[in-house]
Length: 77
Image 1: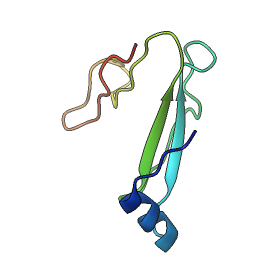
Image 2 (image 1 turned 90 degrees about the vertical axis):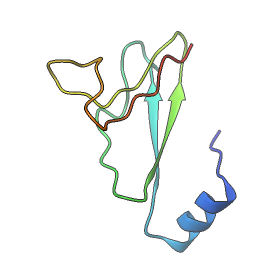
Image 3 (image 1 turned 180 degrees about the vertical axis):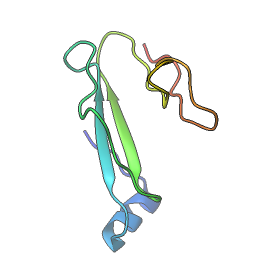
């Protein structure tokens, strides 16, 4: 189910931004789509599937450590 706040729905209706979806752990340790290219102003909505997962903007060598200024969802059971 997609949820949309009033402000986000208004921005989406006006154009210029997108609501992008990421499925976290839907088929085990996968995160389709494999990468998301979001523009400034876009919103990314993560859907978490059992069991516990997290989403982190990281480098290839340290996949569980957030980049400086990057994104980290924290542990979602």
